[in-house]
Every structure is written in C-alpha cells, then in structure tokens.
Amino acid sequence: MHLDVQDLRNFYYRTNLGRAAQRVIRGQMQAWWPEAKGQTVVGFGFAAPLLRPYLKDSRRVIALMPGPQGVMPWPAGAPNVAVLCEEVLWPIETGQVDKLVMMHGLDTSERHTALLEEAWRVLGPGGRALFIVPNRAGLWSRRDKTPFGFGRPYSAGQLETALRKQNFFPERTAHVLYQPPSQRRFWLKSGPFWERFGHAMPMLMAAGVVMVEASKQVQAPIRPSLRAAVRKPLGVLEGIGKPEAEPV
Image 1 (cartoon, rainbow, N blue to C red):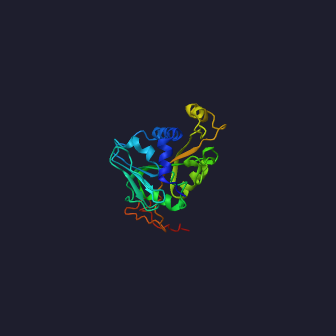
Image 2 (cartoon, rainbow, N blue to C red; image 1 turned 90 degrees about the vertical axis):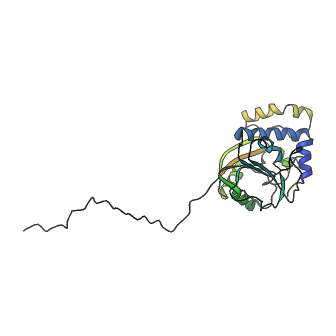
C-alpha cells in the first residue's frame, strides 16, 4: 500500500537520515542524467526530492502523486508542479515523456503490471525511465522506520525481469545507500565512508536501494507473411533456350 504523503515529506525534508538518503540517490541519478535541457521530466510516487536539479533547464517537470498517497505542493517557494492522479491513469499524453523517475511507486503499488504499462505508454521514443526500489537483501527494507521498509522489496534480477515482461529494456543497474538506516549521529557522519566502502566491496555489504535505468522497447509489427514484389528481375539466364536433344 502507498504511504501517506505527510510521512514521506517528514522523512525526506525533516530528518537527517532522509536528507542523507535523498542526497545519495539523487547523486546517482545525476551521474546518469546530468541534465535534461528542453526535455519533459516526470516523477511518480514520491520522486519530488529527486527532480529539483531539472527545474531550471527542462521544458517541463511534473511530480505525479497517486491518490492513495495524497499530494503536497511542490516545490516550495516556486510555482506548483505536483499533481494528484489515478495510480494507473496519468494525465499525460502518450509518448510525451523524455525522463521518468519512479520512487515509492512500484514497490508500494498493488497493481504492478498496470502501473508499468502506464509508464511504458507515456514514455517517448528514446526516453529513459528510472525505477528506484528497496533492495530485498538490504537493511533498509527491514526497518519500518523509513519509507523503504514498506511495500515489496526487489532484487536487481527481479526488477529487471519485471521490466522486461512489460517491454522495458534494462540499460544499467546501480546499488546505493550502503549506510545503516539509523538516526544516530555516528552513522550519519560516517555515511560517505559506507557509500565508498559499499561500492568498492559490494560482496561484503548489501545496499539499501536498487536503481535500474530502462528504455522503452518497441516490438516490430508481426505479420503473417511478407511479400516482396520484384519489379525488375535479374535477367542472368535470359537467352538460354530449352535444352535440345543431341543428334544420334
């Protein structure tokens, strides 16, 4: 089930742990997507904390928030771009989105297939989608004091398989958020160390979050048969008559 928007806002904007998580996840996203000049960027779920870097140069930024979660005005101190919407019926025309970010959307939804179909519908040719979910093997999915402790966690393989079934092609995968999900000062201050250590030694630690970037896969139309009309057939054998019987 979806979390309440007030709980999500309080975690990401009013706790040190939430701000640290926001910084790490957004850093990885910007490493993949450093800019979105002239593009349409859409977030679904509670992706608003990640969209701010694109407000200045993109053509349009929209933060879609599902009805069961609720909506809040965003961004603060600027014209609102947050929209309350049906979970699997977005107010966006087909093929209009260049970049799509989904966080606290897929893992908390009970309609995974329909949600991915809607994401596929709005994504345009050459567009990219970024799916962010709690890691099944990580500590964050086991602590219900953070938003990643609710809903369905995924392994990287499970998420990639789910995306392929809905005609997405996984382009690259990242594991982030290695620091423990604790508000204690020691763990917060040592967060950057744990991120470096986790990336260097991933076999020793499980990250809290899995991120998969995917593109829209469009299948070629299937027809019963293809007919090719040859207008000018080659005349290689022209001039060769029927075989004649040799004289006895």
